[in-house]
Image (tube, rainbow over all chains, first blue to last red; front, side, top):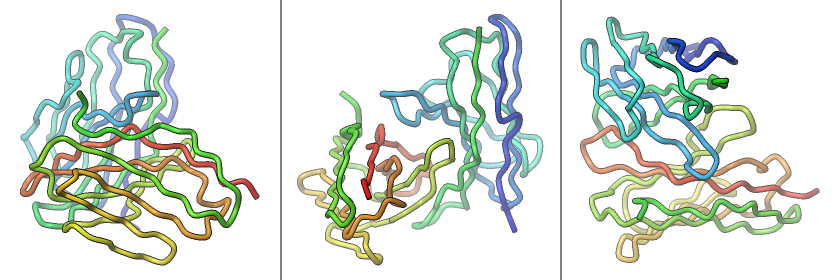
Length: 114
Length: 111
């Protein structure tokens, strides 16, 4: 069965370190998204991609970067981790443009920055 | 002002009750409306999807959209303990894949 996976599921790091969160999907979806979820804010879009070599900034992109070298993967990098980036991170993917574009979410990565 | 407003709850109801969850929005460009359900420590999953104003029913769930009032609702009939989760409304403009989510309402159904 097609799926979307994230790794690691839990990560503790220190302020200033570079961290990369992995996202891998086997749906063969062109669209991929990274969100962070915080109490009182819900899901906020960090970066998104509509295909290989395409990346776009979301509403909370400062301090984060992504790259898309193939269809299956969209890794999220925190250049220099800050305590404000402690959060739960979700990756999602969806099909091409159309009236129905359900986003399929991964299980999430819980990141703690000390 | 947020584009999508949703009461975070928590909402606690007895088993069998009718539950009403609501969101308001300010962006008149939103055309597609969704409800996602998120169990604790899991990713959200799509529950309902609507495009036009009016009602859409799926089993015990009814999604209602009122574009003139910029108001959407999710009704759950005969609520079950297994419905205990956080419900997120979501919406997007036509032709774009980006989705704007509400903050989510945490629901607890007491047996």
